[in-house]
Amino acid sequence: MKPLPNEHAQLVRQALQNAQTAGDLPAFEIPAIEIRPPKKAEQGDYACAMAMQLAKPTGMNPFEIAEKIAKHLPKSDFVGGIEVVKPGFINFRLSEDWLKAQAEQIIAEDEKLFTLDIGTGKRAQVEFVSANPTGPLHVGRSRGAIVGDSIARILEAAGYTVEREYYFNNAGVQMTNLGNSLRVRYLEALGLPVEIPAENDTTFYQGDYLKTFAQELAAEQGNKLVEADWRPFKEYAERKMFEQIRATLKRVNIVHDVYFNENSLYDDGLVEKTLQRLDQNGYVYRAERSENPGDAKAGDHDEENAGKGKAAWFRSTSLGDSKDRVLVKSDGNPTYTLPDIAYHVNKIERGFDLLVNILGADHGAQYKVVQQGVKALGYDPSIINVIIIQLVKMIRDGQEVKMSTRRGDYDTLDDLIDQTSPDVVRYILLARSPDSHLNFDLDLAIKQSNENPVYYIQNAYVRCAGIFREAAARGLSDEGADVSLLGAAETRFIRKALELGEIIELSARGLEPHKIAFYAHELAATFHPIYDEVRALHSDIPADVAKARLRFYRAAQVVFKRVLTLMGMSAPERM
Image (cartoon, rainbow, N blue to C red):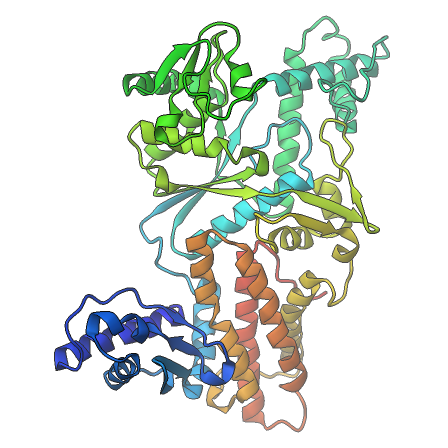
């Protein structure tokens, strides 16, 4: 099945071509045709307003143009009526008979319902989470995980071959601090005298998870590591923490295809090659201070990164940046910018047609520098698409719960799953646009009522499942049903169900997975009143009508399962 706006647009395009061939319209290049639902439901199901757009190239009145288009529209099974209204709108009504027949088409497509061809033959990569393994995943990081995986699911529904990637950074100061923190906890676990850094010490991780790791390490190694430096502790903490992160993600139905280790960029020499290529292309200079400081002030991050002495600078201002950026500090160590550019060169050279990065709000400027970097190397930066994830506030009893990885003072994703469910976590973190701040209301999340949107949506599927359990117990089947016996209430739901193709297309093109969450709630809101009105198993319902209604509920069940799967959620048989 194809999105209905696209089907109507194809009809209008054919009508324009027919009108031009017949001489009713002059020759002109046909622009993109936009089909939308009209502002008022009584005006029809879809509307086309392009006649106003064609007034200038044709020199004709928009209403006259609309009449010509309507006259030459090809016959179609899905169009039940056409109305031309001033100043030049063409309103379409879907055929009721065709709508009823779509119940069978929905059932036939099943889990492939509205699989589109937008990305056919194309490869997409979605990189998300990519958190340093310094602590368990908390809600803030988890939002990016849910958004990233949902985008991957939508792109798959749009026809792309998708890879999910985790950029694994196990180097840097944070990981050194993690190793030192575990070393302190290890000595403590052995009962040796050790000074525990104060809570305000920004180099020490306070979380209880390190106490657990230390106890396990002490049980495994005894006192063999008493004289060791931070390195074996960093390796142990990294391994244990990453195992935990992967297990946590799996609980919310997320599994990455690729775990890309940042160190490989250095081992393969790509970081150095990237610097050399930027230099050869004239985008690198070496100086103690920036030649183009832009809005930099005293204490500016890039100026601090330069260090004391000559640093290697990226002349990013020549590509539209507000200031030049440090690539390599005066001590010879690269900043984040250089390996980030190298990493994206690696991605592009792997042959992806679409790259999607899910990043936190603090990375808003960095990704633009990366795009400028790949452009300086001769690549097309437009394939790099960045979704910025805004902050999440945990709300309990009407009060915000402060979170800090370093202090260990936060609700982990595992905590939230334990208190609610994987489905609740996924939906609530998905149900707002990523660029909006989100309040995670734990009190609402644990409610088992229609106030909870997750319960409300899943209960629609559960109601369908319950109907079929009862039908099976009575020996009733929906096979061979005459769906032409369905009524107006059922076709009202089918109309809403057929919007799914359009929602998938909009979500895929705009990388906006929250649209699926909005639609899921609207779909449930359409369904529940119909469920109360349309009985399939009542004794006074004629057998042939009952069978048709069972077929309708079979189609509804397929649609809800498809929508829940797109959001990475389960379709429970009972609640």
